[in-house]
Length: 140
Image 1 (cartoon, one colour):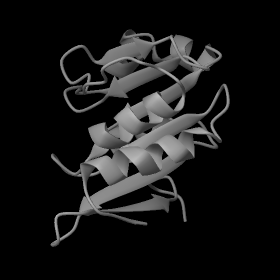
Image 2 (cartoon, rainbow, N blue to C red; image 1 turned 180 degrees about the vertical axis):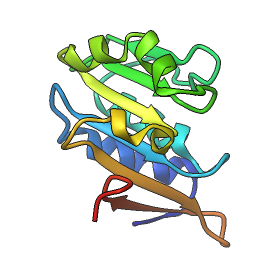
Image 3 (cartoon, rainbow, N blue to C red; image 1 turned 180 degrees about the horizontal axis):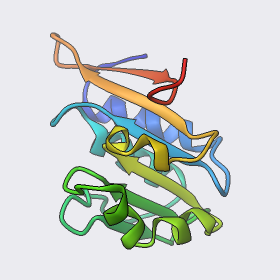
């Protein structure tokens, strides 16, 4: 899917959020500045949250509970090991009746459950973004 820029990215993600249900996990992959946070903003808004969504790079996880489903927004960028991910309550969040959204998910793919939706976002030469669904790293 080719997206024209940040607003188009948010709009598209907002549309995708309509199909999300409790227990879904969405894994976002892409380089720095690719648009993972724009996708996150659209997904959270599409689930009905009014929150100002930012990347949880330093807080590691943000919770948005004011929409149709709670969203638990992770950023694995600064984490060094699977043990660190588990130490911030990863398994507990997976057991919640909400949507788990993970930026930099490909850093620890073994921790993401079967059925995770994997999306890769890549900037294009025209200033847009290309979003593709993909298989979990290591599967094919």
